[in-house]
Structure formats: C-alpha cells, structure tokens
Image 1: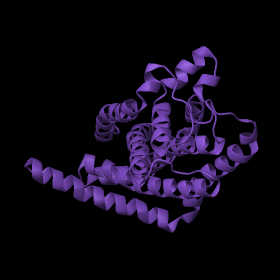
Image 2 (image 1 turned 180 degrees about the vertical axis):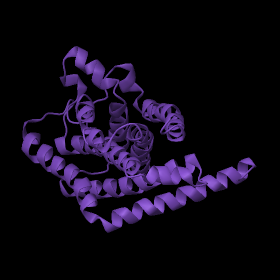
Image 3 (image 1 turned 90 degrees about the horizontal axis):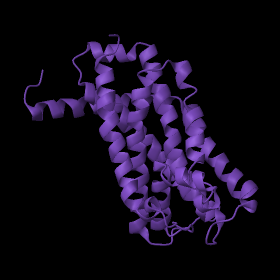
Image 4 (image 1 turned 90 degrees about the vertical axis):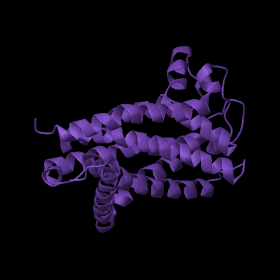
Length: 267
C-alpha cells in the first residue's frame, strides 16, 4: 500500500486510468448505447429548431436557432447524468463495484476512472452536437478563443454533475436509476435553454435565472456571440462568474460524498 501523498496520488491515477479504459471498452463493444446517447439531443435540435422554432421569439431579436444551440449544449451536459447514474448503479447491482472494493484499489481512483470515461464520451456528444448546430445555421461569432472558453464551461458543468450521478448511482437500483431523467427534464426547462427568462412570469423568471444551467448557457451565448439578452438581474449580469462558481460548488459537495458513499457500501 502506498504511504506518501505522492505515492497515493500515483496509485489513484493508475487505478483511474485502468477503470476509465474498462468503461470505454464497454462503450466500443456496445455502439447501440452510444447511438442512443447521441440520438436524443439531435432529435431535440430538429424538433425545437424547425418545428417549435418557427413560433419562438428571442428577447432582443435574433435567430432562434442560434439562441437555441447553447441551450441544447447545456441540456445535453445535464442529461449526461442519466448515463452516469445508470452505469454506476448497474455496476453496483452486478457486483462489479464490490470486486473493485475487494481489491487494493484507490476509492478515489475508481470513481475518477468513471468520471474520466464519462467526460470523454460527453466530449464526443458535444462535438457531434456542435457539428449538428453548424448544419442548422448556428455560428460562432466571437472567435475561437471565447468559443473554446464556452466549451470549457460546458465540460466543467458536466464534470460537476458526474459526481452527482455517481453519488445517486451508488444509492439507487438500476430500475430507480432509469427514472433519473424525471427530475432532470423540468430542471432543463425551468431555465433559459429554450425561452428567454424575460418572457416568463415574474416568479418563474427568478427561478430560471438562478438555475445553475441558466448561468452556463447565458455565459456560453455571450462567449459564442449568439443572441439573447442577459437581463438586469444580478445572476444575469454575473453569468460568467456563476457558470464557474456553481459547478465548483457542486464538486466540493458531491465529490467527497461520492467517495464516502463508495467506502461505506453495504454498511
């Protein structure tokens, strides 16, 4: 067993690499899972961009599909929680998690391996969705630097929510994990993903503006140079700061909870 902090860190990263490789092999050998993961956001782009989009307006004017795509990017990052919850709960139900715990592995390393694998697949999801956005008329208006910063914010949100998914997956059965989308769907709708909060009733506007997803989406719209008024409220005026602060807060809370739950399984 490693003794020094450096040895423990190397041990954790070695385990993380092995676990991430294992998870990615499962993805490669089961391409139907990848297809199902990618199909939903693509269908949503077509549905909202072309079917509902003709009746949508953007506060301050502008093309609705350009307004829509940052919201779709954010929603896809949030919905990635579903795959995390299900995969973690399935590993626990099949005894995979118990086998890892019976071996001299790092608790943090095993969970980080899960996180790394999910980040790689989420990056693939985002790349494909960006390409789809270009096909429907979405454009980056502020240059490559701000665009990469926006992508970084989206992936930071996904990384934070992975730990929420791990924590939930270690507590739920696969059947219960299958219903994880139910609270997530209204969470992505009560935000600025599809409609400007300024067009919502007063109380709902407050809820939407303080939604962590809204901060990330609004910051991405500003970085991409896409339409959509920020509004005059404090969260709207500080979207970039909140887009960083919300995910960091989630990580600070749920990463330790996930490791603690992993170590206390079956107790």
